[in-house]
Image 1 (cartoon, rainbow, N blue to C red):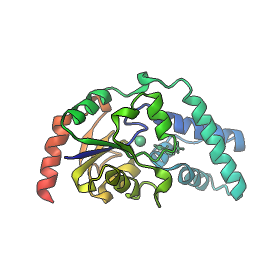
Image 2 (cartoon, rainbow, N blue to C red):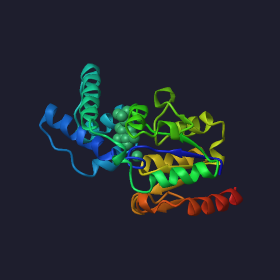
Image 3 (cartoon, rainbow, N blue to C red):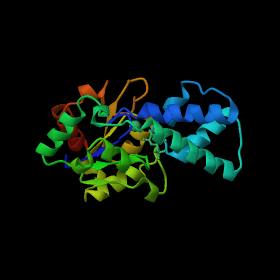
Image 4 (tube, protein in one colour):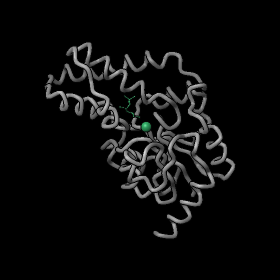
Length: 222
Ligand code: BG6
Ligand code: MG
């Protein structure tokens, strides 16, 4: 296990909920409609424009290209306002300890988030220096569930995905890791993340030794 490819929202920080809150507010502002809870997991891990497409598709609403662009910008402004008070206290339980364990074992760290706000959020969390690289989601052809961002993340730390583990809380993200060839480590419920090769119910349960053991087994099976 030479590298770890980290998702951000919902794995490193508790920012995942803010994305859906922002979508809810946007749709309320524009159409005076409420989004159902189940749309949250369908948009988790999915990039901004693909998320809006999924939401509009669900609502059976079509908008012009201009309105679509305006809406993605407005969603981002709402999201950024929700991040105004973000501090290291928003780092999820167990994450600082897990990062330390990876570092102690010379495992390289790369961010593999779909979010264009990734560098900004890492700064706010004072975690920028902990990472060896940040994969740029604007430079990849397809967003999660496509594997591109995880392949780019492994490349950014000079590794093959097969030498890495990826950590994710979203259905789209686990699919993306599996397709990339890295070992998928899920954080969440068995019901949603059934394709994760290793699963932890919450970040506080993430454990370096268990991940390493699973990776050894995974690399022998290859
Ligand atoms: C992912 C979130 O991390 O980033 C998604 O899970 C979000 O909900 C995506 O749509 C893109 O984020 P941003 O900040 O570029 O709009
Ligand atoms: Mg996530």
